[in-house]
Image (tube, rainbow, N blue to C red):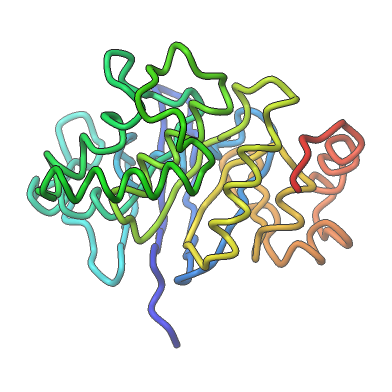
Amino acid sequence: MEQAAIELWGIKKRFGELEVIKGIDLAARRGEVIALIGTSGSGKSTLLRCINLLEEPDDGEIIFDGEALDLKRGRDGTLHPANREQITRLRAGIGFVFQNFNLWPHMTVLENVIEAPVHVLGIPRKRAIAEAETLLDKVGLAEKQRTYPAFLSGGQQQRAAIARTLAMHPAVILLDEPTSALDPELVGEVLGVIRQLADEGRTMLIVTHEMRFARDVAHRVVFLDAGRIEEEGPPSRVFGNPHSERCRAFLATHLAEPQGESN
């Protein structure tokens, strides 16, 4: 069997008395697109952030490309990286696209894209610029290289953020509600870029509220409810014949809502 790109075993996370993630097992194969769906507060984004330790889990094991993260328990009860060199190296292979873009406002689009490849990966600046120009053309921003983020639309900023992520040559891309901060008319341009990445065989875990997009693009859909995986399977089965009553109720509501254009 092919080795998984990402494996999560027994992941738990609490904030104070609230247990947000309650022992989740999940693995993504290379080239697989997994859509994480569920109501607000179900634990989707927290789970995604636990993968690269933006949130440090209270329990569980994380394995990236066959290599287990070396974690130790701190005084606060959470798991912390025991080997900073390892986590820095592994994080470089896991791209993260945030809801709110997180572009550096004092840098141009091009500077945003080349910053990490030059200073983290040590790629020569000239090569980084050439690769960034190719990526910006790929996401439809070839004419915006010298533009600052404040002068871009939300859709353009998110596409720039995707180009910045791709510049690190990640083995896995995590996308946390990548269209939630966008005006409805801008959603389609971002979904189109993500669809292109899926067609290229990129390994992606996507937290999304765009149900029709998830149905069309994902290889597997995972429905979270109250910090647990309540339903999991191929889109045809999850959307067509969900076993869980909670999943059925969720889809009945969300498939009836207007969705962003995913073509």
